[in-house]
Amino acid sequence: MKRFFALALIALLGIPPVAGRAEEAPVTRKPSLIFTEQEVIAIEKAVNAFDKAQGVVGIPDNEASGSGGTEELPAVTQPNVSVSGVMDFGNGDWTVWANGYRIRPGHQAPGFTVVAVKDDVVDIVVPGDQEARIRLKSNQTWRARHRDVVEGPGH
Image (cartoon, rainbow, N blue to C red; front, side, top):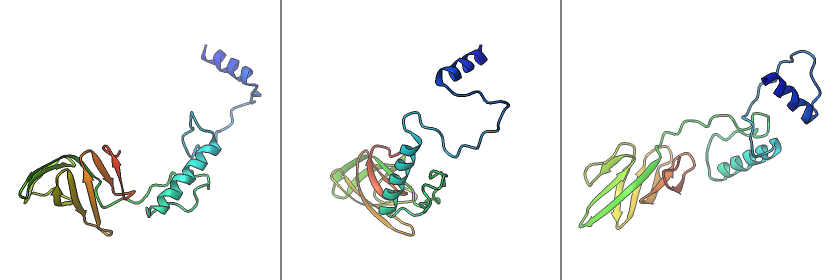
């Protein structure tokens, strides 16, 4: 039944039958159900150009070389920082929930330091080769790789 369906589909699409089995070339990127191959390449070029403009390191220079940007970016040593809640009680007493940690004065999370809390705003320092000083509110995430702030968990 599957063979009949495949032959019927080939006939409907007007694809000439192939004599014998030919080996398929390895696919370098997953095919898109929405975009054409040219659109996928254009999108990847635009994303890579944006990343380069934002100063993200490790973007391949050969975006359209057929690899389609499947190269992995180098590992980021700085963590993403996701703030899920902020409570400022006044007089220097506060609690911040970030990256699953409850952070209070004198009790910091690993990988970053909360340096100030004012109302619903948290000032954070993330050490590393390029130290990041960021300001986040509840339900915001700083993405280390892109060095930007997004709403939500930032996956």
